[in-house]
Picture 1 (cartoon, rainbow, N blue to C red):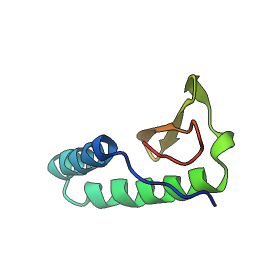
Picture 2 (cartoon, rainbow, N blue to C red):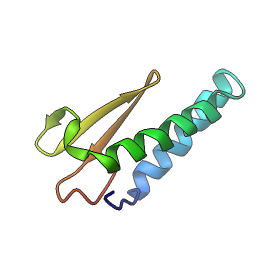
Picture 3 (cartoon, one colour):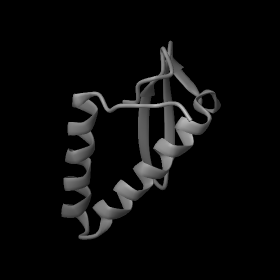
Length: 78
């Protein structure tokens, strides 16, 4: 699997999304974070599988949530 690191803005965005989902329904933030962890694993296993939306930006949908990732060197995840 490829290694990854969150861009600081992406990490902040994930934290904000988790807080939003918690406010919508307590416990929903846990489902979001578990789904995010799962999709990160899937991206790391096969980063070329996902649909390109702009240059090297790819979009991954998971369990009613979406993630955008930047894979120019296949080393970073946003």
